[in-house]
Every structure is written in structure tokens, then in C-alpha cells.
Length: 66
Length: 211
Image 1 (cartoon, rainbow over the protein chains, first blue to last red):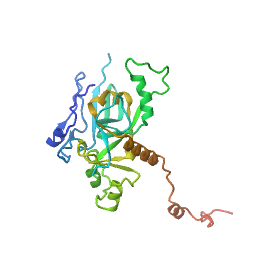
Image 2 (cartoon, one colour):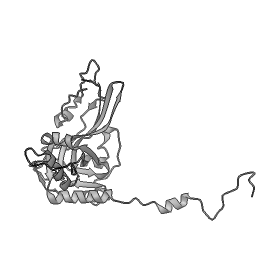
Image 3 (cartoon, rainbow over the protein chains, first blue to last red):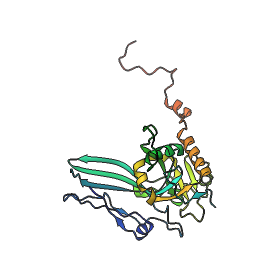
Image 4 (cartoon, chains in turn green, cyan):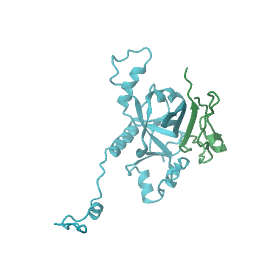
């Protein structure tokens, strides 16, 4: 299982970008349940931190035994 | 108007009062037939609550080059933290809406809101940062404390450090958290006495019962 996800910075929230994890294990896609969709923060000029809300990520992937 | 002083320079270890961004709280990890599922909540801001002396002793195990302790007696598994929510969202009861949770509204201009901002409500700790600190006013909810692995926090702390509460203010936070955690939940005696049957009145006998 692997996870690639950009950090949820203000720009992500503000643009309402969907962030998702990507799995790359043997054809079994990692799935984010549900995908987080931002756009809920209240931007405060000059205060880039603390505007977002907690959110949940669920990630699935196949275990790779090496 | 700010009610807290902070230091923006990161210390050499995780410290009490450190504020980090985008910290993960693992809800569960399950594995079924070779497929593993991880559920986690990402908190935009958290503050470290673990006693600083414990963190200082734990950090001795991670020093590079220095003499490490002879045993692992003081090593920590986890660090206690609490989320710092956006105050404006807390007042609206919407700060956990992305987790599909609705919280109680706290009118900012009302008595409860004013008490909260004066840190007179035991569950909450209001933090209004100075203008030079890039954090909007926040509220620590002591009820939502959780732990994160020390190793995880050490791994991400350089990247995710935001600032650190100055000594007096982190001690105030720590003391208020300890007080909240140590509270004793007393029963509502009036309500419980109404719910209980009167001991002096015998229960009605079942039909056909003898004696």
C-alpha cells in the first residue's frame, strides 16, 4: 500500500480541490472513502494556518509481502 | 487582542506547547484477505500536552552522538495532543462538519462565548495569537485529546511545526487540561432519586403470587 497525497494547504481548500490517495499495489487501487472535497475554510488575510477543518481519509491497498 | 505569547523558533525536540499542522490521528487499521484499510483524521492544528520533562527525557534516546541512557525506562510511546479548532467555526458549531458531526453552537457574543474566550469554561482553551503569528484565533477542545506516535511526530515535526506557546502560557494550558481531565463526574442526585422507585413502597405483587 502506498499513499501519495499533497498536504492540505490553504490553496487546496480555497480552490475546492479534491485530494485523493493513490495506491500502486499490484492492480488493487487504493481508494479514499470518501474523497475529501475542500472549499469550506474561511480565509483570513495574513493568517494561513488554522482555517481548515479536520477531515477523514480512508485508504485501502493490497499488502505487499517482500 | 491576543491572549498568548509564542515562539516561532523550533526547538531541537518536540516540546509541550508546540503547535503542529496537519497531524494525523489513526482511527483504525484493519486487514482482511490481504487488503489493508487505514482510516485517519487529519487535524489542521494540534497542540502538544505531554509534560515537557517527559518529552525532554524521551528526547535523550534520539540524540545523535550524545550519550544515551542505559535503559529505556523513560522512553515514550506516544505524545498527548489536542486539536486547535478555528474559533469562528467552533462558535457556529461547524468545526467538525467535514467529519459529518454537528456540534453545539456557542454564541460568540453571548455569555457562554464570552466565558469561553476568557478561559472560564473548563472544556475549552481559547488562543488568540499575536498579529505576527500566522494562526487565526483557535480553541483547544480538551475533550478531543488523542495521542500520536512519538516516532511519527519526530519524523514530521520539522515540516509541520508552526510555533510554540511560551512557557507561562503552555503551563496555563497544561494546568487547565489536567484540571479538566481530573474532574469528577457527580451524578445528578435529584434526577436519579426521581428515577428510582421509593424503597418504602413495596412493589406490586405479581398475579398469583403467594405470601
